[in-house]
Length: 209
Image 1 (tube, helix red, strand yellow):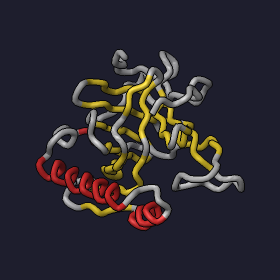
Image 2 (image 1 turned 90 degrees about the horizontal axis):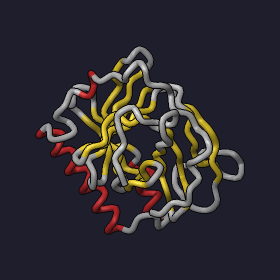
Image 3 (image 1 turned 60 degrees about the horizontal axis):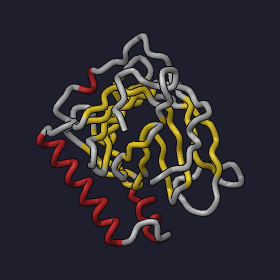
Image 4 (image 1 turned 45 degrees about the vertical axis):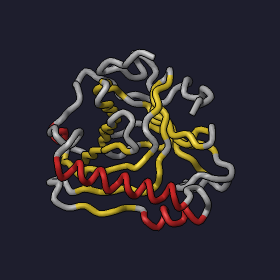
C-alpha cells in the first residue's frame, strides 16, 4: 500500500486511525497525516475533532474490551499529535490545550500500527506513561486498569511483562533523546490551510488485524 502525503485527511482521502479488538472496531478517529515515512508516522487531530468511542448497553463509556459494545460519537477537547515509529509497540502523543499551551508527552503502549487501505489499525494495551513537558519527570498511568485487564484475561502475565518492558525501553529512548524525542515536536503547528477531519461513512470496512 502506498504512503500518505502530508495534509491528507478525510476531505482529500479517507484516513482513519482505528483500534480493533478481536476483529471488532473499538474506536475510530479521523486523522490528518503530518508525516508518513519509513521511520516515523505522525497523525494529527485538532481540538473539536469528532471520534467514536465504545459504550455499553447502558450508554456508559468502556475502558477495557470485552462483552458487547457499540460506538458513540464524542469530541476531543485538546489538540492531539501522535508519533509512531513503525514496528514499535507504542506511540508518543503530544497534547496542547486551547491557545497551544503544551500539556505533556503521553506514551501510549499499544500494538504497532498496521497499515490498511483506509489508514492505520492498532489496539491500546492499557498501560501508559505521562511525561512532563520538560521531559525531566514522568509517571506510570492506568496501572489499576492494567491489573484489571490481567484479571479479566485480556493480557497473560507474559504479555503484561512484555508491555511493561516496552514502557521501560521507551523511557530509555526518552533519556537518550532517540526518535521521536530528538525533534522539538512541542513547537510544531498544523498548516492553517488544513481542514478539521470529520466522521463520515468509510470507517466500517471489516478489519483485517
